[in-house]
Image (cartoon, rainbow, N blue to C red; front, side, top):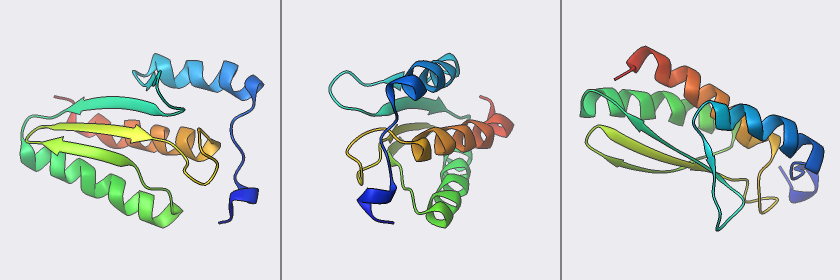
Amino acid sequence: MSAAKIAKLTDEQRSADLKVVEERGWKVLEDRDALYKEFLFRDFNEAFGFMTRVALRADKVDHHPEWFNVYNRVNITLSTHDCSGLSKRDLDLAQFIDDAAKPFSA
């Protein structure tokens, strides 16, 4: 998808939609226009299973997270590089990620 087709969140969208994701534990980073959240699991197997689910979805929607994994911890940053900031794609993927983490509640 070209950069012209992916729009940054408007001020109105940011006011309404970012509040919703922040209530679910996502943080808006201060040093860049991105969302961040840390997930904890019982063990590496659960963390990797979660990451696999997210990876399959991310590939399907062509929107890939930045992430870091150590044993049972997965840190995820979402930002849309095509628009150099947050877009609806980030909000949609954040919702999927939260839903994917529910069965693994540590």
